Length: 212
Image (cartoon, rainbow, N blue to C red; front, side, top):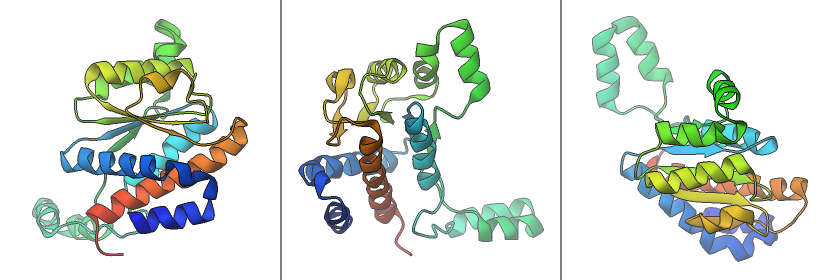
């Protein structure tokens, strides 16, 4: 983890003051997955894309192959020898993660029937369990639907990691871990959030999967 952190902060020295906080977030993610739990992610606009991006790095190999263990391969072969052989070769182990931005039918139903500020909170209520993690992304820290998701997550016993700009906004009061990158300009904040979550995904993957 320290090697990855050192590489990241060397390329982005603005993140040096957040080094310990990023490490804390990585350790929390490792503990979440070690306990058999999952990660939920949400955000709006560019942060919506970042939510999907994070899930893409966690749910399949990012920098490592993550080959299936022998037990899973044998179970696939037992169901169907031909397709099971293909699946056993191609599938990769996953770190369970759900982007709350990706479910258009549910999101539009909640927005239409209950209110647009509830689109993420409703999913946290449905998906979230004690021991899970919610990563809430908001450059201002004040996005109403993200703040409501964070409040709901705290009520459900989830650990909350916030990715925000410098002030932390309203989210700051509810986050267990706040990674508030320096800056007040949306684009500049997002440019620094990407190396942060890439580092987190790399550190977690390296912990669980040894082979490159």
